[in-house]
Length: 102
Image (cartoon, rainbow, N blue to C red; front, side):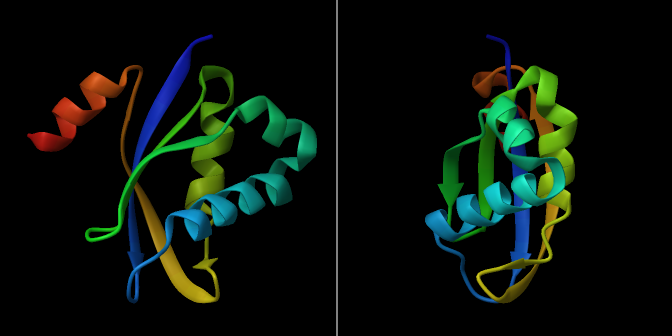
């Protein structure tokens, strides 16, 4: 199965918990595309840094656009207003991390 890795920057007042982030993105995916679309996405939170509010998600390559739109559509995370920005998308985790370091 081919996968895509998505680096995301979260702008939110204060910090966000790992579980709150994955729940918010999963909820957004369900609202926009239903259970069938969410199951096709195979969405996973690979990495999360709470100090700088950066996250890395993994999804199926066929549902990349669905997952990207779900991430962008987030308006709040656990009652706090939030804005998300997709920094970079890659086919491998190694390339994504290399790109984020530079």
